[in-house]
Picture (cartoon, helix red, strand yellow):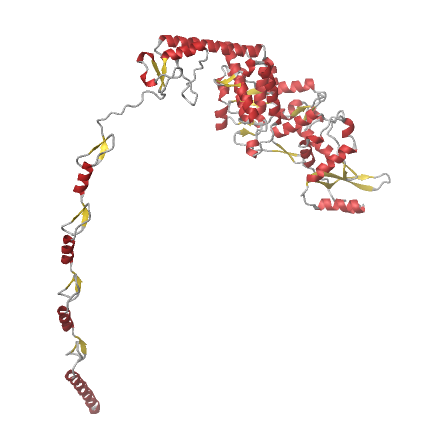
Length: 615
């Protein structure tokens, strides 16, 4: 125990001795001895003394608390105050900076002149509008009068009449009326608006009487033309309406399909209408609007300035305008008979919304009366006085057309449709079609018959037959084929049969020569044309027994797109034709060939089916 105590004491003594030695040794310059630890540390006091003794660079002064050199803000302000500021600026005494001299700016503004119509604001020095100057606006929109080109602003108040901001001379208008060229159209307005909308508001008595007399003469002249058309040119008047409905419904869905086509039917009826105009100036000058006549419309159609459907609207508007003028004077008389509507090829009917629409006899498409398109373009229907007298119930139309077919057709309907029917009323109106030799068919049935004729084959090889009437075995005329083609297009029916589609679009294959269409020359020409775009696809038709009592397969075919791949059925049929092995086709079933499809959802402005629309 005593030994441990002595060791601790000796260690303590050695530490004290080492500290004394350190305190006796000198520290290097800039450092001093720490009395508690005996170590040499930085002498901060001497560092501050040296800093305070050394001079700071120009523009700086010694911080007495830290001994550092900092910016001398007072000397900077003195230098700023001594230096001059650039023009337009002055020294800020508090900060010593140069700022904008607003007083000198105001002085310069007050010295400079303001532009015309403005004056100097003494408080701000700015130029403001001079409210004491009254700017005289022109009194009239037009600078000169219409006939004698007088200055419109200098007209005498007694001779002045102002209409929609345009100034006219009353004496000039009276001379204009007397000249016979007055048309009540504002000559200064590019929109060709009416000049006088209400004669009762005109204060000048002489002008008011002149205008009232002019209006009476105009009404009488229009009525005379309308009576002339209905009494002397009734067929031409009806043909104007027929041309309008034809143009309006010709390829009606072309805009939605992005395919304008050729509009052959419209071009045909407009050509005939043009011939009527050449023979009668009254017809040529029938007014669609004040400065637009039937002659102008046909010229625009020939030059392509107006679309076919737009021409249809114009012609229908002209037709109903003439009917309205007669209806105004004979309100209790029904101007158009049922026979007239049959010639027009359309009726006025009420749809399920009780709105009046056009019902084209041979078309399933009806414009949707709830669409903006209808309300914008068919407003002329509601301008007809007593229009309800021209409306025919759809049931009555069906009875009328059915009775016409019963009376004029040489056959009954049950043999010419794919459906089970008893009379013509069982077939929708738009599907009834009559050939030039007075035989009537269901359009869809006729499409199928034509496709079967063109797809005909012998020994599984193509052997097309010219489309014929199934009752007479006579060829269909070119007019019949053209009528079928137009009915297909206008009713938006898609033809799936490749041969029929190509045949209807190739009028060079049509012929009126019976010997030619029954010859191999015509047949070979058809096959050559078909093979450019189509290929003949074989399929299993039925089983049969030959003369020896053996089972044989009847292989038929149809024309389809050239790129149609070979399927399993066609492969087995071709193997059977190569080997005559009945096992290849013994398990095959009859193939149904597609011929057509009735497209729905054509357009938001068109109702797809008149059957759904009314029943």
